Length: 313
Image (tube, rainbow, N blue to C red; front, side):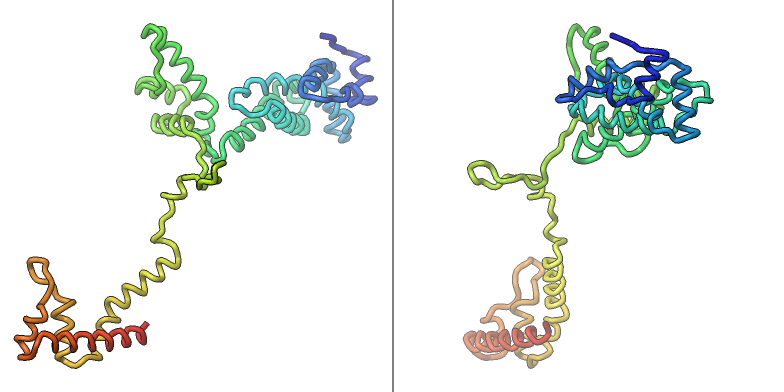
């Protein structure tokens, strides 16, 4: 790998730093070009950093950024296991690099590579957390720490247990491993278990699209929706409750005493054994009329109550 330094690097970077990047057609070409860009000496780096800080020299900023693109490529490779595009990881890392260059102070006695590493990782971490799953799996500081460490530590535990058990693998953490991990990362054991559960699951469409044969897909939306809380259903339920209490009471007041008693005995009373109220023949005996006459009175009373309920509603 060719590394330029001194006057050659200075001239290339300051005159036209972007001319050092050839036309790119794919990610491999970009990575190859980034690895061919010259590194800066300590003196060159501090000189460019002071020009940027004191004079807002954008060409100096370009030189600092270009000389550290290979650092972004190297760091981004560490996060390929999350299944996200390598190009996107590099892009987000470059954003972190630019932020680091903007805030870099050459008088602190630290090389830009050490300072920028934290900014690059922070941007990549944020990108992964936002895009790894449809639903964000880590929001608190402890959860973020677990998200980026749990899988690697879990693999280490698996390797140790497999060696001890003669090649037997376990998919879950043992209580002792949970305690060890919580102690190392300075988090609670409950948080370790919660993050392990989150990482072991996957995204599920709430409302899946129809299949190729036209059948409707079945998803959680079918059983997660609470129909009782649907506005129309709630209004209907409230109206039904009101009619069954105050409405019935008002409708009964519109009947004469005999009709009211017949309706109450037939429909509103329940015996101790759970059976219904009096029969037509029972009421016929009470009033000294035929069962058919009681039925006629009941039908007329029901019509009158129905009209009263409609007016009440």
